[in-house]
Image 1 (tube, rainbow over the protein chains, first blue to last red):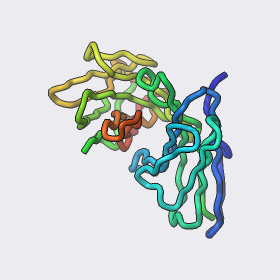
Image 2 (image 1 turned 120 degrees about the vertical axis):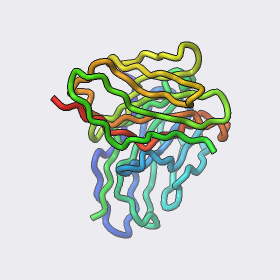
Image 3 (image 1 turned 90 degrees about the vertical axis):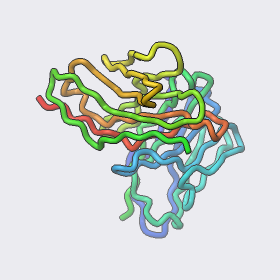
Image 4 (image 1 turned 90 degrees about the horizontal axis):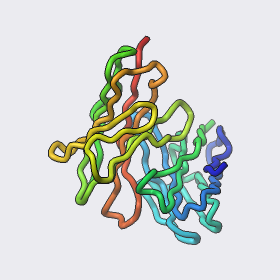
Amino acid sequence: DGGITQSPKYLFRKEGQNVTLSCEQNLNHDAMYWYRQDPGQGLRLIYYSQIVNDFQKGDIAEGYSVSREKKESFPLTVTSAQKNPTAFYLCASSGMTVLLYGYTFGSGTRLTVV
Amino acid sequence: AQSVAQPEDQVNVAEGNPLTVKCTYSVSGNPYLFWYVQYPNRGLQFLLKYITGDNLVKGSYGFEAEFNKSQTSFHLKKPSALVSDSALYFCAVRDFTSGTYKYIFGTGTRLKVLA
């Protein structure tokens, strides 16, 4: 089945540590996105990529980094510069059918600072 | 600026009663509007969309939405609510300023259907 997979489901980070969240899709979608979800704030865009080897900052990119070396993969690194990283992180992708079906979302990674 | 608003943080409705979850938008072009549903600790799932055509759009799980251009609204509705409809609902509108297929999401409305 085609889909988008995020791992791990739960992640714990110590203060000052960098962590990487994985996002892989087998939908042959060109575009991929990372969102952060906090209670009462909805979804906020961190980074997005429309094509391999290219990505753009979203609304809250500070303290985060990404790479897009392969079409299928768009990992997100939460760096120590992100002062309040505890949140639910969602990865999404979109392809030629984006106008028909919008985004396809992964199941999310819940990151907690300990 | 392009935006989407969901004015209610939570909507409570009794099972069997009709439900409405509100969404208003502001865009510079023709609006591409979506509704998504999110169950606890899961990603968002597509419910329905409006691109063009009939103002009443039907989607998954018996949901429908009414596009109202004059009121710039796209409210989600269901004639008879089920307890299993309890979830977080997001409205989204295409961001035309970016030149991409980015969407702007509302802050979400938690729907609670009471048995």
